[in-house]
Image (cartoon, rainbow, N blue to C red; front, side, top):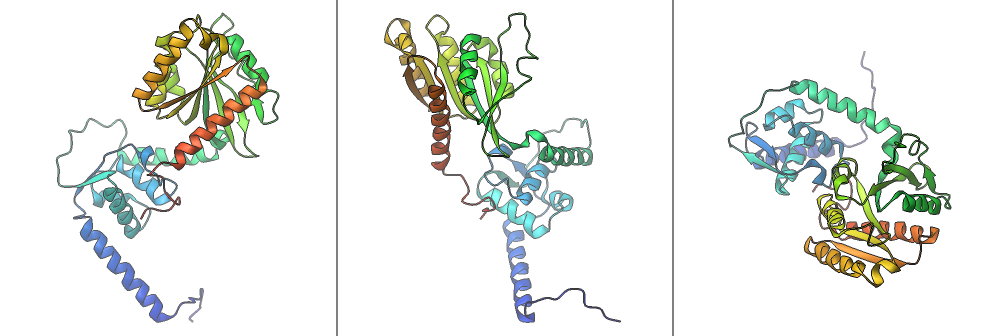
Length: 324
């Protein structure tokens, strides 16, 4: 007996035309992608690809780290050849990969085989999507001169309902006089999203720590207390951190005593020149004291600078799935 399980609502002619169109597009993609035996090399960091919300793109980028030929990627992918070739063609067109016959660099011995790595990566990414910290949209980094300024900063932020103090921050810190650094709280943006707030000491010797834990930084805010607690070498290290992390804007909160006389004014001039040479911007805001309103304005301005920079980027996609 014949049992109908699903009704196709399109006409037979439309289905045939759609199939012919897909076949024609697949043929063109195979022609433009050269041979499936060609080598493929990723030329840029996967994080720079502006369409990673597309599941096909995400999988292809992951496979490119382990497979170096088109046919290997097609075999390993869980998506149809048509979709994978379309992504590879787009990545090649935008300069993210190169395709052709070329010699690969000598490969080192593998700690894990390719299949094990792909399975492990897939599992980790799936677990990460379910993790409690996955709702963190990014980080705002505060550079502070001492713990006294940090305490004032937390007191000021605690005036706002959106601020959530990390209850582990003070309990896990060493009480032997070491500076307080790390994630001290969060800025809640609605029920399911928040921005992590990090504090670092403005000292050059701590710069390796800055780079280790500051991925996903949205903005940088530097609090300058006085010229004694800040040196030009430390401030220049902060600008270098911002350049490496791709943060185009730095917001400086400066006491009027710092900028009005003494070495403070010279610091700010040298700092501004250094930032401009690095192709970034620094915005100096003079205040009498750190107040809740000062901190609120600084965080808001930092986020607005981030949004303004993002909206002016030429490589951002018009839609998460826009890979044409």
